[in-house]
Amino acid sequence: MSLTAIEISLVVGELAPALTGGWIQKIYQPAPRTIVLEIRTPGHTHRLLLSANPSTARLHLVTQPLQNPPSPPGFCQYLRAHLQGARIDTLRQESGDRIVSISLTAKEGPVRLIAALTGNTANLLVLDADGRLLTDLNRMKELHGQPYQLPSPPGASGHRDRETRFTTTGNSPLSLSAAIESYYRDKESTDAFTSLKEARTQHLKKALKKQRRRIDAWHADLAKADKYLNYARYGELLKANLGVIKKGQEAVTVVDYFDEALPHITIPLDPTKSAQGNMDDYFRKQRKYDTAQRGLGPRIAQGEEEFEALRRELTSIEQGTWQPAAASTPAPARQRQPVMGQKSPAKAGPFRRFTSSDGLQIFVGRNARENDELTFGLAKSEDLWLHARGTPGSHVVVRLGKGTEAPLETLRDAATLALLYSDLKKSGKGDVIYTKRKWVKKAKGQAAGAVTVTQDKSIFVALDRHRLDQLKARSVSIRD
Image (tube, rainbow, N blue to C red; front, side, top):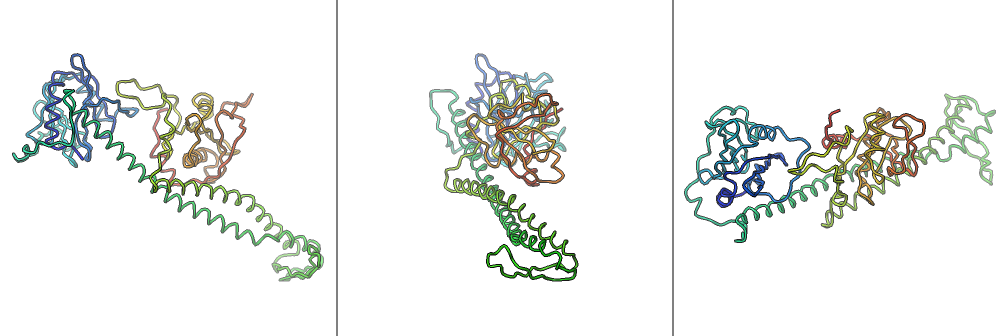
C-alpha cells in the first residue's frame, strides 16, 4: 500500500527542516520507478527515496545502501545532467494531496521536481521555472513543453484523521522516516519472495509436465525398439539358411539351433528382398535395439532423477520450506552490482552474460581468445565449466560459491547455452560435458581455448525455445 496523504504530510513535515538548503550531490535510479537523491547538508549526508511504484508509492530517507543497475536509465541520466548540484529551496506537500513538490535552484535556473505518489497514476516529473513539463518518468512525451496542472485538491475532511500506520519514537528527529523505511523494506522483501515463489511454482509445474512427456516419449521409443530384441537371432538363423531362401518368400521355417530342444521356428520375410537383404534387415534392426538400449536407458534414468528433483522442490514450496537457490550462493563481491556512492567495478571481460533461472551468473566466451580468458582468467576453481562434447564451441562458466553445486535448472540453462554456441546448434541437440573449473587444463602447444578435461560428466540437452527466450530475457548486454 502506498503512503496516504496524511502520512505524506507527516513525513514531509519531518523531512523539510532536515533537507532544505541541502545540495543534491548524486542521483541514482536503483529500480525502474524509484529515484534516490543524495543530499548534502552541513555535517550530514541524507539519501531521499522517491518511489512512483503504483503499489508502494512513497518518500522517505534510506539508511541502507541499494543496488543500482550497471548503467543509469535514461531518466536518471537526465536528472544527473540537469539536477545534480542543485540546491533544495523548499520541500512541501501540495494542497494536502499525495503530491510532493521539491523546488530547486539548478545550474540552469529554478526548477521543480514533482513526486506524484498517486497509486496507479504515480509519476516523477521535472518542471521548468514557468511550470512547463520538461520530462517525466512515465514518458508522457505529448505533454512535454506544456504547462503542468496539479490535480484538484481533496476535500477539507482529508486532514481530520491524523492516524498513521507507523510507530515513531521521540529519540530521533527523523524517526517517522526510519519507520517508513523499515516497513517498506520488509514489505518489498516479502513481496519479492512471494513473487519469486509464485513464478518458480509455475515454472516447476510446466517443467514437470514437460519432463514427464519427455520421459514417456523415451519409454515409448524404447518399447518400439523392444520388438527388435531377438532380431540378431533371426539374422543368424537366416545367415545359416541363405541357400534355401528364395526371393518372393513371405516366410521361412528353419531349425532354431539357439534352443536346446531344436524346435522349428517361422521367420517373416520381405518378399521384395533377397535372402541377403532380409538377413541385413534383421541385423540392422537389432543394432537399432542395441543403440536404443545404450542411449535411452541412461537418459530415462537421468530424466527420472531430474523429475524427482523438480517434484521435491515443488513439494517444498507447497509445504512452506522452500528457499531460492541463490540465497545460499551469494555472488562474489567483484561481480555484485555497484552500491550507491561506490564506483562501478571494472568489467571482467566482454563475455556473453546471462542469469540462470536460479539467479546464478553464467558467462559464455565469444571466440577462442575469450574462451581462454574466461576459463583461465575469470573462472575460479570451484566454478562449473561446460562445453559441447566433441565439437568446436564456446566455453561456458557458472559462478558458484565455495562448496556449492549448481542447481538442476541452472545446469540445464548453462548446458543449453553451451549447445547453442557450438557447432551442434544446427542439430538442436547433443551431449554437453561439465566439470569443476579446476579439472580443466590448457592443452600444451595448442591454440588459445584448447583444453584437456578430466573428471567430467555429461548431460544430454535439446534446444528449448522457451528456455532460450527466458535466458535471453535475463542476458546482460556488454559492448565489444
